[in-house]
Image (cartoon, rainbow, N blue to C red; front, side, top):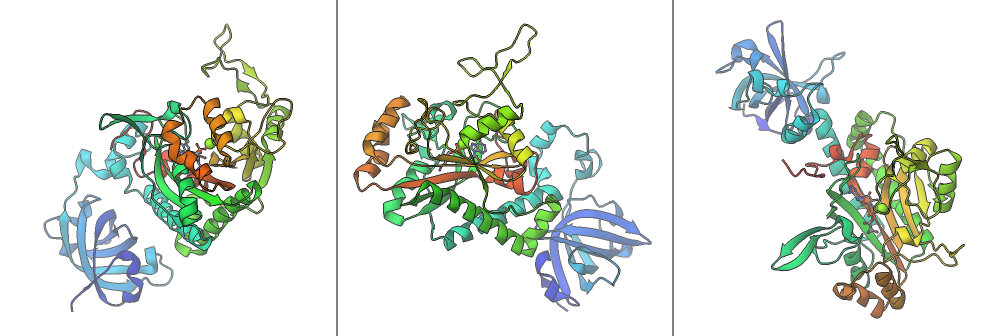
Length: 461
Ligand code: 4AD
Ligand code: MG
């Protein structure tokens, strides 16, 4: 009888039928004259049993993994007491090699082992993707993005696609990638925020999933040169509404992932101890965080004007307490959130360490220090995953913001116009998708959460 061609994750209704599966040899072993093969097609894994006499051009027991194959046979539920992916097994009566894979020194299984150097793994990212862990992370990433999209639809927030090629900076000139654009200067976008703001009077609340680019000079676990930026902007809201909305979107998205058996399984495989965070999230003011760090003896290296650590005569970094006005560095931030061990909204940063567009907190000027209506959401193991704020809505205040940061306002004319043509109280945020995924999937670095990660010096493969 003719066989039904099917993807592995759609096989269950085809039990006791003849099926045709196409995929890659994932694992192979022979036992008592039978060959057990696990074949993979991206949608799942299938155990197949081959009788040795069926082998044609290849000797099945030495068939290299990653060979692409066609398998045809009867699909059967595995007998009770036995386990197999999907609970079924294919008794193969016809099989064929589609594309050979090398054996010997070039065999897939000999390319990787525990001592493989990270550089080699990075060069071989295209093959690493075939591993169970990497593919699980990327499957979860796909489901995470669709869950976010569903959450936004439910919150009445519309998706837009802003440009990547821009002529304005959002988060400061230091991390801009500059390029020649028909003889003019242009940049790869650092954030789509300013464009989202222009959509409010046209489309209402909006979000985007767009690549952002930062020429980050530091090599850290959580910095990429290109990352997927989930950003949203909301009109006629208060600062409290903003934080409540971020919390709602994140919790709805997680609930959706945990309600779906496939993503639930991916999360538990990658992060055995994952627990959905409880609401409401803790809110900690910047000033209280500085106090918390000092109370817990968490210091930071003293820096010169350029931000380089100052060393003593023995070449050791000089450690000092935090003071109000300091930017809380990655290490201190992570120590704090790991110790508290739950999501934290850190809010109310000083105006000097934030961007030109941020709204000042009403009545916040204390002892000469001015604070902003800004918040970062910190997650254990990662630190900052979301950065957001209320935006300056008054045109004169915005002009003063440009001035304070030494920004020429002329390329920003379209952004300034938002305050001229019917301004409104509004705010928004950006969430680093790789950082969020690193938190849910318990990955050590965001590099594992990107298909082809880019960081200082690397754009291959
Ligand atoms: O805190 P950031 O720089 O904020 C903005 O860009 C705002 N304009 C966003 C907005 O309000 N629409 O970046 C937002 C988030 C960070 O919290 C972090 O998760 C992620 O983007 N991010 C990075 N992720 C990986 N590598 C980098 N180099 C990142 N820089 C920021
Ligand atoms: Mg930030």
